[in-house]
Length: 137
Image (cartoon, rainbow, N blue to C red):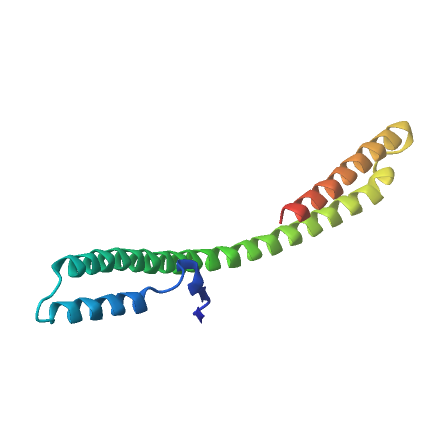
């Protein structure tokens, strides 16, 4: 059922057996001594309909193959971007963590405490944003 990762059932069952049968019936009826033209015409109409259905089925399979060929490279690119984002998140988180740890030493007194608090808030927002990015990717 799989041909290069394609699910051939997407297009449905093949109509090739029905088409072959109708072609045989048309040939048989046409070769009779007294062919029934109404029957032959009906078989031809049915044959035409099944040929259209088969064409649509094959087009669906081709479209699926095209979608797969476009999707797979995009999927790989998305995985690479996800890895880059995770690395950047980790690097940013490490930088903020180092900055937060050194913040009280940078500014002494009351201003240092306020600054330290603001930096902690910033660190928490980076951690929260990191979680949201993780959920998105």
